[in-house]
Image (cartoon, rainbow, N blue to C red; front, side, top):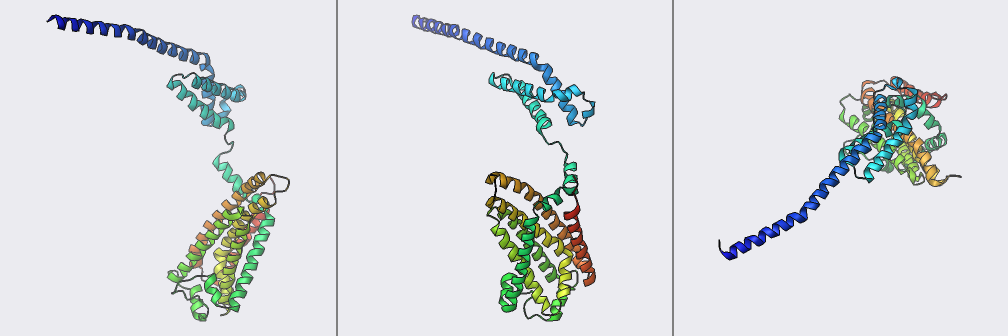
Length: 362
């Protein structure tokens, strides 16, 4: 090796040795920090692990439905243990302990939260309470709004009848139909009678019934959803639905089929129209609470009314499902007007009895 090369190698060796000397303290310091963190995490766990394990045992027993196997002390100490472990989690986050400890504490705190602050009732018991009196009490709590909705729908039916009787062109406005639909002003009695007592596979009849159900379901949802605008859209939608009913009754009345069309509508209509009235009343209940909150704030009045209205709307949706089943089966299978009226009247009596009598005693 030349003298210049030897000098170059010597300088590089010196540089590398200098770098190693500088990095060695840093490496040693990093290792010392890791060891210190591990010791701190172990010490932190050892000091509090007893409370963690006890809380985990209590929560696990409650999750498995073994509450009776717990001692009174465990049940009474549950809130204290929860707060203790939550505090441990807060300290662990601030001191940046190891990820495993953080994950364990986060999962344990989350599970304990549901046992301490979560719902105290199962889904089965909630459904039993809802159908066993909760829904009927909510309906009775907004009786004024329901009576207003009923009056508005009845007035809409009268107005619809008067409009089409004065000008039959209003029929197409109130009830948009297809070109193949025979239910139009001027139709013969035989044609209208055939729509009421047609075969089960009668396509125009099924299509018209499906249109009625879809229209009424849409009216019910909109009447509830737009109730926050002081209930005005809800009232307008109820008037529109009543006008549609009045136009249908006028058309069949002109051919002496009033009782027959009432029976045709009654099978599912007593349930379906009741559901629409409930939905409209729920929307009006919210709107009236916003417009007239009384001594409460608008937000608190709307929240209280919204809770009651939501229960009623849930019942209305379930009633629409029942109406769809009655429409799909009863309307096609039952071809007798007296029997149709009997089924419709029985359903109406059932709903009235359910909403007025059930759940009066808590």
